Each structure stands twice: as structure tokens, then as C-alpha cells.
Length: 497
Ligand code: BES
Ligand code: MN
Ligand code: ZN
Image 1 (cartoon, rainbow, N blue to C red):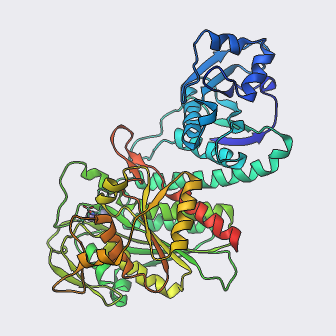
Image 2 (image 1 turned 60 degrees about the horizontal axis):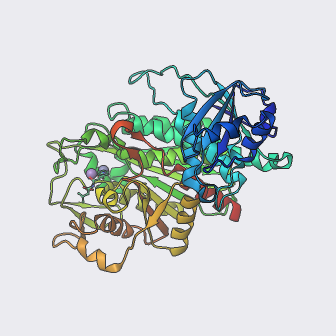
Image 3 (image 1 turned 30 degrees about the vertical axis):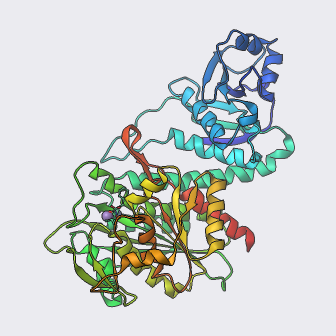
């Protein structure tokens, strides 16, 4: 998909298609009005006949509209003008791309960026147009999986802006949108790969490719390194698998030398069968997505490097499989984490926190300004928040606020949940410093409580992406979330320093 920015009149575009918005009660957008004028009221007469009501997400494709130079005009319903919010805007953009699928319209000039979205400026609208369009045309393809399908439809989109002096800021927004879309694509591709291809070693190779292409430093800790460091929690999860574990560390250094880094830690369980506390068979395939946190770290690094942000950023990915085996963790086993704290493994399926806690302790050596971990951590988070928001926890109010705001701006939302002291009690063990589970009540919170015990030396936040990282059902696949949220968070960091 190619994108560009231009400023021109709708009726004068020679593209295969011109895309314009129409509202309910026969109200036209500015671009639609221009076409209506050029065509002597063709659009108004059509709306009067009732063929297009302007409901959000509906479309009508017209050919040879009088007075225009393009082959087609696509009318896109945007609902009531006064109710045009972020969701409706994204829906309209997505509908416009889908309407051109399997048509001969390979290139289009879209005038949707002019639409008055509540609370949002032109830059926001352009960035979202790029991201939503790229997301809509995405296909998963891999030589060992599904081969690339021939796709007919939009492949070049010209985003039209209302005024010539909008062009400069529109270009910046385009750049942001492209970088985020690239990061999201990488995260989706990795997430969608099956567990037999996307192993811990494969993630390490992909990280090395990224490092080479974008000039990052990479370091990969092997099992022997972890043994020396005393990473007993991480290693205990890897025991059940024939795939060797990896702790992948990527350094992006483009901030001031004395500035402490932001560290992103992504859960990289390349398949989670639950271990001896085996999961039920139904939908177990979806546990290949249990490395989506890791994928989002790579995707975010890609976006940040693409934008050349002047920050210091470290990506860490503890990666292994969680399988049942004669050598695997058993319920009741007690392991010693790198921090020295002992953990009673009451449920081997609560493995994410076990690999994250050792990565967090290792992160102390980087003297981070902030640590954010991203993990498909708990089914309970899906019950709490569904698929619209990631769960957000942390030990610093400002950081939680910054991440909430970033998610809001990116339309990749996260919602805070409490981390009160009272919940910590649920992790009490009679035999070790803590148990790895806290019972059924507030499962996402007790998981975050567990992690908080390894976050005493830095500002820390935790994103539980169990409900947002992938979709089930007919559209099964990774979403690439929360790459947009994290990239916006880091854009803001770069802006402030
Ligand atoms: N990767 C899962 C969490 C998960 C489950 C995400 C289903 C999305 C859908 C995690 O490792 C896990 O198994 N968590 C357990 C924790 C429990 C044993 C305390 C869970 O959520 O059931
Ligand atoms: Mn699990
Ligand atoms: Zn898991």
C-alpha cells in the first residue's frame, strides 16, 4: 500500500476513484458538495431518491459522475455530522477501503481527512487513515503457511487535505501513521505465525534482523547465561520444552547519553499449553498468540527506529514454550527467582509472570527511567475489559496517566485497574515467599501484584493485552496492539525531552 498527501479539488482529480463523505439527512461534506456543484446536483438528486442515507459505514459506488475527471466516486456514509467521533471515522475509512475491494480502482483520492471528527485535528485524522487503511488491506502470508493471495482493489491512496498550508503538518502525520502501521504489521505477522515456526530461536532471529536493518544493538542470553544469573523462575517454565529459552535484549540509543532508558518487556511464550496444569483442548491453538507482547515490543522498536526518535529505549523479550513434560514444572514446585524471592508454582499455567519477573530483575542493571511490560497475561482480563481495552496497572500515577493518554490518542485504549495492597494477600504461600496465583477473584490484579514485587527499583507499568492482542472467530488473527499506544507514549517522551 502506498500513501501520499495532496491538496486539490475533488472534481478535478483523475484518479480511478474519488472518496467523499456524506452525512445523514442528506448533508454533504465539503468535497461531496464540490462534486455536487460540478455535476449539477447529481449527488443531491441521488440522495433525494433515497439510495444512500448516509448511515455510518455504508457506501455507494458511482461511475462516470458528470463534471468530474475521475472514473468513480465513492460516497461514504458518516452518520450524523454532530456525532462524528473517532469510532465512526475509523469505520468510514475502513468501509471506503472495503468498498473498493475487487474493483478496478487501484488508486483513489480520499477526501475523508477533511471530516470534522470531534476532539481530533487533521494530523490525527491523517494518521488514523493510514493506520486503518493498512490494517484493512493486511493479509497474512508465509511460504510455509498460506501463500500470498492476489488482491484486487486499492493499492495507492492519495490523502487530500483541505488547504495548501496543511501540507507540511500532514506530511508529519503521514510519517507517524506509516511508522505505526509498519510496527503493527510486524507485530501481526509474528503473532500470526504458528508455534512450530515462531519458536524462541525464531524470535531471536527476527530481533537480529530488525537490529541489523535499523542499527540496534542486540544481545541474546542463552540457557547457560540464565543459569549463571540465577533466573530460576524463567528457567522453570522452559524446563518442559525441547526448545531452548532465549532472553532477547535490543538497545536503541538515540537519546542523550546520560538519559536513563525506557525498557519495554514483552511476554514471549511462543506456545502456552499450560504445562502440567494443562489447558482444555478447545481453542488451545490460540495460545500461539501468547507471544504477542514480545511481538509488540519488536513492532514498537521498529516504529521508533523508523521515526528516528531521540530517546534511549531497550526492548527485552523473555521467550520460551510452556508445555507438559516429564521434566516440566509441577504444581507445588518451589523455584528461586533472580531477585532471590522464592515462588511456589501452584499452577504451571500462570507462567507469564514467572518469565517476566526474572526479566524485570535483569532490567535493573539498565537503571531504567521506566519499565513497561506487555503481556497476554490473564484470561481474567478478557472477562474484566473484553476486547476493547488493555488492562493497565503500575506503581506510578503519572506513568499510568501517560499510558492512558497515549492509548486514547492512538485509539488503542488501555484502562487502569487498582493495585491495592489488600490484593497482595491473595499471593500468600505457606511454603515460599509467594505463590504464583491468587485464586479466582481479581485474577488480573493478583497477576499484576505478583509482578509489582519485582518492580521496586523503578517506575513500572504493566499492560495486560490478553483481550486486545488478537481476535478469535472468523477473523482470527493478531491485531498488532498495543504498538500504536506504545509508539504514542514514546513520541510524547521524545517531545518532552
Ligand atoms: N496466556 C494465558 C492467559 C490467557 C488465557 C490469555 C486465555 C488469553 C486467553 C496465561 O498464561 C494463563 O494461562 N493464565 C492463567 C492464569 C491462571 C492460572 C491464574 C489464566 O488466565 O487462566
Ligand atoms: Mn498460561
Ligand atoms: Zn500464557
